[in-house]
Image (cartoon, rainbow, N blue to C red; front, side, top):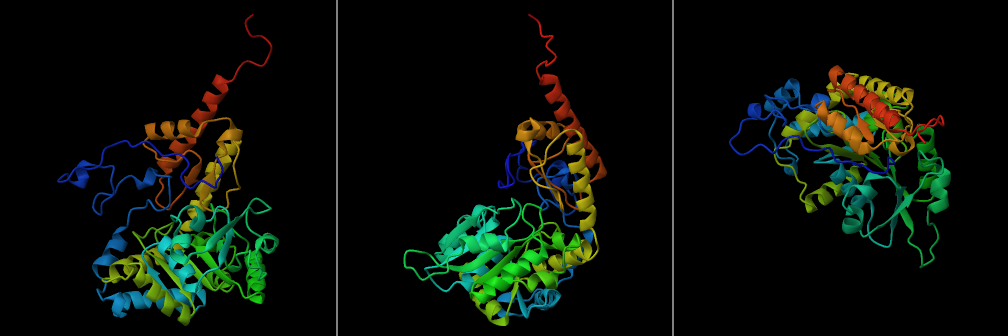
Length: 390
């Protein structure tokens, strides 16, 4: 299974939904403020994390102004802080990364005909319910990177539509994603694409939902990446562990129009401090606090374990994701999911995502699953020494 699939195998449910009236303490399979669920053994996504006590305290003490009226101090401060962190004039809080990408692209695109060039694995193409087509009337052009890892300027130049031939759909926006599937697009390549796009009057947007990971890994600063593009979306709930929320960053004019677009799709936030206080706590504790690097080390440990057992990776492990090539490894994703579930571990069969709340016990348990899967593979292999029974 390739890393083009976001959720390749669904883990079996180990329990039924909690009925009404049943307390969280009686159903340990769910997350709750006072009874955290099993996030420490859940490798399905880095959105699984349980909000921390300090995050809850930040929410409990936040301001409750109305962001539709620009009246929430906590939200205004968060937007100014993130904009300054990225070296851009303004920012706008949104409820999710999908909303952030869709609002940003709709803000940039004034009307058809227009097309958006992106990686064929991009979230906006594969995991946002056709939003670009529905909201913008734009054609999405998914490009396969020639190097198999990330888009290069040469990939973009080969697929961008620059002519005014009425049969074509001109490229008005290039959407980049960093990280994508846990892999980093080099800063130098983003700079090349950004410079070329500006020369040709093409807008650039970065889905930086997990850009925090690339920066934490030492591949560049937030400001350096933001300087390559016209707008950027950053997610607070992936990796950083906030309950919800993303932010889009760009020029003053961009954010003014984006606020209008956000309102038009029902994204106005009333008591916005509840979201922005948790978001700021997440950035301070996980990103600035250095916790993301540990998840990268854990991911490399799992990747090394898999390869050491003779397994094959779909792509190199560069940040917090490990992609197992089960086909080349000669195993079944379903077997990994089932064996992991027996140990109380949740995972998709080919995508392993490490977040900052993963426990050492879960790490060891998943390593044991890898060992068992490979042992079973060897046990099931036919004899090859020519001594099979006649």
